[in-house]
Length: 427
Length: 107
Image 1 (cartoon, each protein chain N blue to C red):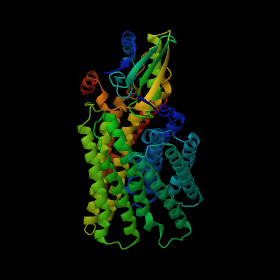
Image 2 (tube, each protein chain N blue to C red):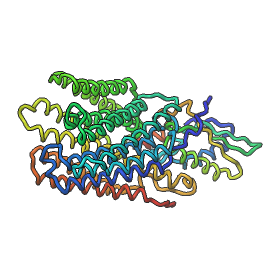
Image 3 (tube, helix red, strand yellow):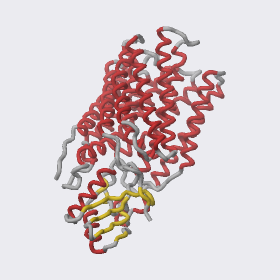
Image 4 (cartoon, chains in turn yellow, cyan):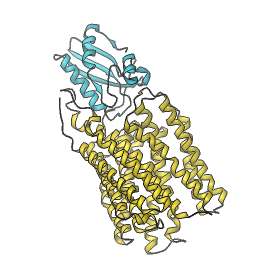
């Protein structure tokens, strides 16, 4: 009647692998908001300046990538229905990333692309290779090949392309060997990272996690395969257009493909929300749902940029586009999902051996909900005001927005470290 | 809920214990969540086997839930040893949630 499960179907990734990524990402988020608070002027100039580059890479690598790497070491076994292949590779990935990212960011901050920055870029590539190897070997040993796992795996391949191109561009700054200057390839490097890595990973994993947290009956693998195909097709077409004739109509096609993919993904999440069994939705999941809506902001901005670029300044559009991706969509989903995943990892670490010996707190009691609410309010207000500041090139608005974003990062860090240092309390 | 057993009386005692084992993420006990499929008693060897599932394979909370299940059985039947047999066929789905569980989640 009942078929036995696989061997050790409950053996999870060691928390010691996962928790350092969360701590590192939280501190990177704080660092990025400190950098923007100390000089908002970087957001009124061309996007290719030392501080903007430092902030972008702090957000993309230290915050977004390190957080996703950490969470995915925990969640990838759920996606592939198999064990993570190696804790050693996971630790290696963390150590290489943690040591290399500051070197690269320091290089950008000082606008010096020499040995330090290059060493950092090499280390980051090694970190990504360790991560990719770990996922590849984990998939090889598992039987499940679902759309979530395939999306996550493809996303890591795009991440490797992104960091490899980043490395080449860095060397090209010092010793030019590419046909064009490195600045020419920046949008290629950026979009491989944004679309190939972040979007594909968030869509693949989000389509599994959000319905799971809502306890939704809705399933539609076909739609998710379409989303997967459209995102990859859009990015591939973008690369083709980049290297060939940059015709206006053709350059709209990748945007259209990605827009359709996002509309399908948003409709999938909406249907999952409608068919949820758990009627009361907590604030963390609401923040993650908000991030799905926030995906539309960079899309609208890039469309407006393409349509209006002849009539208006490029600078504000491009800065707003990047800002709305890293401080908007990516940050919203990470802030929401941090307090949906981290308390459970720490709860497991602290209570799993003593869960039946007395009444334990719930995982959601491990963080301060008032700090979380303060975090969200400061974040949403800070984000909106900073966006307005970019569009209007208004340093007063930029300073107010930056201060609110700094407060948001301080509250976020306080809550994260409050969870990380939680001690057992049996009632 | 629909839990198979070979001893109705002891099964009732066992279920009372299992009602205290919660899925920490959902906040619902594992019986109303529909995770418990069968409770078998092996009287000659004083053994209990709880056949159960998880909401997903490699569920991050799985180890805690299984440990708590064993501890709950140990408290209800101190003279018995408990084995938890995890199965994933039939797989868990939201349809397995009991009426009481649905009421709790709708509340």
